[in-house]
Image 1 (cartoon, rainbow, N blue to C red):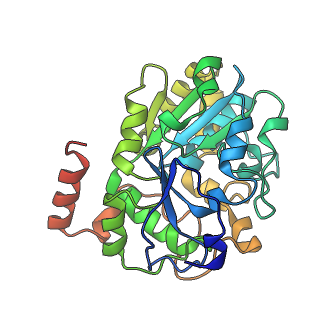
Image 2 (cartoon, rainbow, N blue to C red):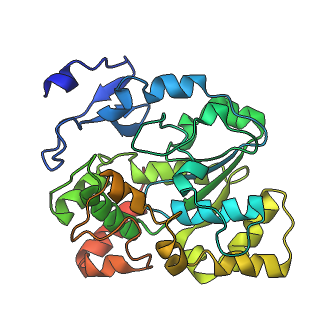
Length: 304
């Protein structure tokens, strides 16, 4: 353990996990808190503990929740456009990260996020917290929560490339090693199955959508989002949002493609490509053998 890690104050309900040598960032070590995996970055000064302790949800708040690499960015942009009735080409130059700060991440210099506590209504936020870790005020305030999930095999593949891309992870293991740690719940924000279940179990109050629906019928997703948020859209407005939230359009748009992460050094420009990589359904077939896929699906659908 590095000196910096040794000097961290570990709260009683946070537990350090064994070091995974495949992560090459010297300050990264995973830890478990109330059933969810975080990293030691969340325990640094101005930590998630202090940040969330200050948070008080408002009735007008809107949260987009997900397990990482499940379609978060896509759903965020749709929600933004529905709320702001933005149906034409993007007329703003603010990154999605600024417009939709992360609930559990305090402000840091390399991420151009606004301070959640100072935002005007309606506050749009994203989170990768499991449902039971959301601040209690989210539930008591009447804030709206939307959740997007995705085929676990595609999530695992996309997350593997993401972990290699970002400099706060620097994962250098094989895909097979990453897949094994993913299944053990030892990746950031894991365990995956429990994460998804935590929201599906509250589908009576959470709008649960899928990445595959975003591909197959985005217009219907837009209508569901608008209805859930109490917004009225014309057919023309729905189609405008559909046109400007295609994967190809968003990948070219600097406000949604996270190229500023590369400019700031948060992500590397190499063989891993970019933050928005392929956006396909079924890319897992290029990484799983038939036997591996069958075993993975058996695990995904097995008892918790």
